[in-house]
Length: 107
Image 1 (spheres, one colour):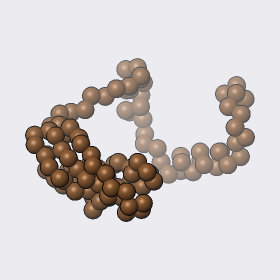
Image 2 (cartoon, rainbow, N blue to C red):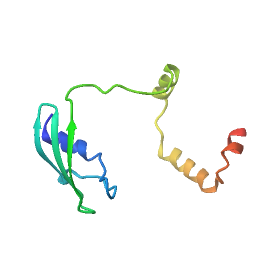
Image 3 (cartoon, rainbow, N blue to C red):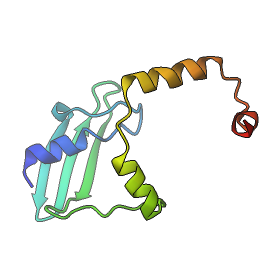
């Protein structure tokens, strides 16, 4: 795995102090050997600095962990993607929703 990919991977991590997501410019590779990486991070928002030690394996496919049944997996895989209109419909619904899930699911 190259430095660029490790930096991109670190952009999915948030600062432990203020919660701001790191950007690639906030990440510096200090050292790596095989799967072990030492990465320094610096938060542009709160100026906290940190050192991350990570084991990053290259080329292995992640294993899916789920509580869905096989039938549910097929159903969701074949479902149409959520559209912007779907999101707007839910937004409009939630604007007037009073939070009573019991009555909502009773209907």
